[in-house]
Amino acid sequence: MSESPKIVVVGGGAAGLELATHLGRCLGKHDKAQVTLIDATRTHVWKPLLHQVAAGTFDPAQHALGYLAHARWNHYRFRLGIMQDLDRVKREIVLAPLHNEQGEELIPSRTFSYDYLVFAVGSVSNDFGIPGVQEHCLMLDTKSQASHFQQQLLEALIKANTQKEALKDGQLDVAIVGAGATGVELAAQLHQVTRQIAQYGFETIQPDRHIHLHILDAGPRILPALPEKLSSQVQQELESLGIQVHVSQMVTKVTADAVHTDSGLVIPATIKVWAAGIKGPDFLAQLDLTVNHINQLKVHGDLTLEDDERIYAIGDCAACVMNEQGDLVPPRAQAAHQQASFVAKALVKRIKGQSFDKRYIYHDYGSLVTLGRYSTVGSLMGAITGSVRVSGWIARWVYLSLYKMHQLTLFGWWRTGLTTLARMLRRSIDPAIKLH
Ligand SMILES: Cc1cc2nc3c(=O)[nH]c(=O)nc-3n(C[C@H](O)[C@H](O)[C@H](O)COP(=O)(O)OP(=O)(O)OC[C@H]3O[C@@H](n4cnc5c(N)ncnc54)[C@H](O)[C@@H]3O)c2cc1C
Image (cartoon, rainbow, N blue to C red):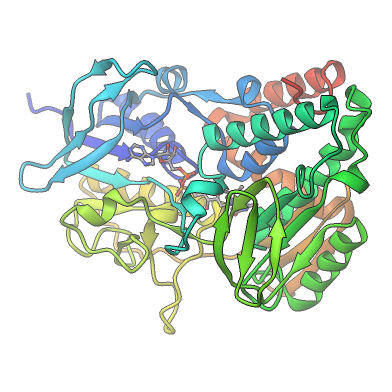
């Protein structure tokens, strides 16, 4: 009897986890294929929530999804590991040896063979080679980086609250480089959290006097993905909260205590966050595959690699052309979700020996930005109406529904309903922010 084909998905994020779930349910459950998901971490947190993890308004310990249990419920295998190499002739991927926190080797280097391989390894922050960024800036690429940010903020507040001498210039100030959705949402969350925190024993800190929040961007306006009117509306709202917005400021270097720009502006800040663009993980450029200038894998319209029709790339790590001008599908959760559904259909057809000659078309349903409890604004794309501006509870509801859609794909209606209820109950007994 011939063995069932092997599908290996590398990366269990917004795209890869949804894909493995679909494939497990459609193929793995009926032994039509052996589906394996590989990820560098043991648990999944939806990446658009990372700025909330950083601010302490979302506790990953309570809400993260454990891959092993999810794999068992959805008929795929999960393996922990970091992909580092690919042998296309043998059709094998190589995982790096795995070490524990003490540096002891837990698992030696391993190989996994595949008939079909999917790259869904996401992206990392792009520092554009600017001096000091790697050494002095925090990034929000992973759950552990976001948790590390939350700890740094908490420690800075605890120190400032108990120190005898007066607070130094910029001691509690935060500079966020990048005024896209991530930077703007993080700034609003931090404003909200630092105002709430005084209620929890941080009486010495006067947020309006002691904590200054800055957003910097090289572009002429914040939120370039939103229409100009909305972007200036959000800027006004941020400024009315006291958040300082610096546009047309190209960062030239970052030091331990400040961010410097090309116009000579120096912003003192102890905590500095880099959210100014993305690139594919560096190891992609080391493989024998065609990547663009930011390490994304070049794909055809059906999301197979230009180099190999047995290998797909989806989500942020894919360079997928979406129009005649050569623009790429943007690195967004909605693109990751759509591409996962597309490749799931394509692979199910291929495994069943049926033809599937469709091309992936990106549907832009609009962009929304939430300023925490202050407001949510954005534009939604309607087939007939074109771009429609939304705000208030409608915008908030659509924003939240994006995450609900992700959960529905992973858990189905029943479990998503229970999870939502459990979260509401916890919220009624827990503090609004994580204080440990
Ligand atoms: C703070 C923040 C806010 C955002 N907000 C929004 C938003 O509001 N709306 C929106 O549309 N988009 C938003 N985005 C962008 C969105 O999160 C991404 O576009 C989306 O997560 C991409 O999905 P992905 O599956 O390609 O990558 P990810 O979700 O990043 O998943 C990649 C996975 O690959 C794993 N991995 C990486 N390298 C390896 C390796 N070598 N071996 C094994 N595993 C590996 C990682 O552990 C990770 O689990 C936001 C991003 C951030 C950082």
